[in-house]
Length: 379
Image (cartoon, rainbow, N blue to C red; front, side, top):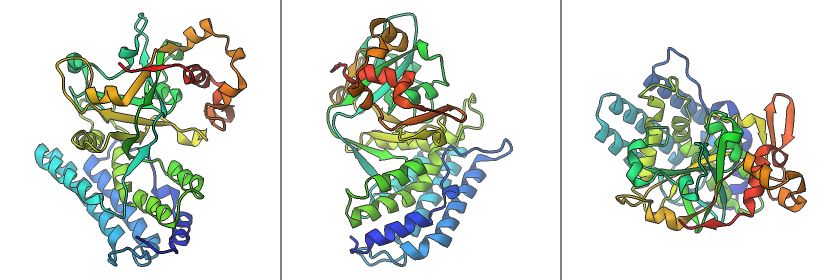
């Protein structure tokens, strides 16, 4: 794809990036009209790219097909498609909106830019559920069974009546997604994938930067540059998927249009399992060395009742537990040092301004320590 100068170019690009142009969890003003708001946000990003990055990338990167303007044209294409999709949706032309959006995603998937990331087999995820005065089973912590699809509501990455499996990197993320619900009244299960997964990654800017430096010695020059360019090309999608809902209790939330269409797109792809995305409820500036992402894996089969056959094969689940239950059956002070260091060993979290805590020593860490060695089962 590119020659041996790629590592030099990728370093130059990383150094020149301005964090203020790569926001996630973007907040609107009360008077903002959503289609106009997102159009301006995408225009601002495109202008930033043209001013600070175009010369270094589009005029210098030696793509194998020798074409110029390859990256900027993809950014403009994706941005315009997102704007068209939202306008069509606002005009009630839902089929047209879906067609335009899906076509733009297909154009983004080309040889030099990889949008799909791999998750290794045996990775650990967590899923939570509010206490309902019953002892939950592992089945209760999987996706909503097909016979209860009528309770599946619309959400950022949720289509009404369409079950999907949601989970997170950390129990802390689950807690934030539940609006900091009483921790003692949440049940948690560990979920492990039984095969390698392919996900579309909506990456927080600092996670993207950390990923670049942390993997610096493990990637060759072409891979490093491809990693950077992939983020830049797909950032319009990241932006469109991470705008906070202005009216979180409204029946229609325009901020959910693009994330929901992305989920619908994924549900039709047998070679893509799900989406990895940052939480709009997490303040990532308060975290260090802690992965705090959400994942959604839509069902890929349809049954009258029970669970998705494909998700059952891909994911095994532990019996649920709670902080209160763990304190009853296990004195947390007796947990071995070895077990503690297996849970985000360098992770820090700042739940109170100015007070940083070692993640593994928090209640979240203690739940994860307990779940680390728990067996997972096929449903």
